[in-house]
Image 1: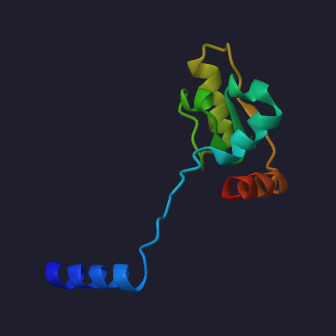
Image 2: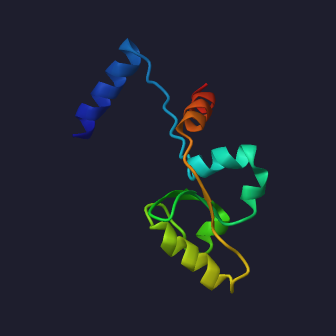
Image 3: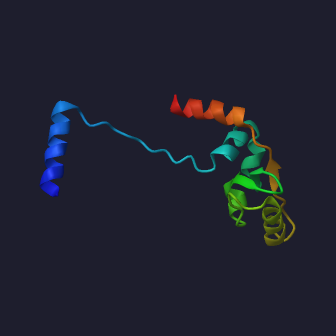
Length: 108
């Protein structure tokens, strides 16, 4: 198998240069977009979604176990209980126009 692969690679580089591909993991992209316009969200447990479902959460929320695809009411309980009542989970509504603009900037 190796000789066959090597011949294909050699032929590809002569006939057509190999392309470079970059993969960018946009972890917590939705909430990061909101943090750009509302910087206070970077320091408090916050998520995009509502009581029924969370799309994504920031790192302060993840510290309490809040994750994507989690019911929001559970995330709210986790933050309140694990912070000893000192913090509350902030819910931010989805804004797909904002995400489209920001993803266009990233793809630039």
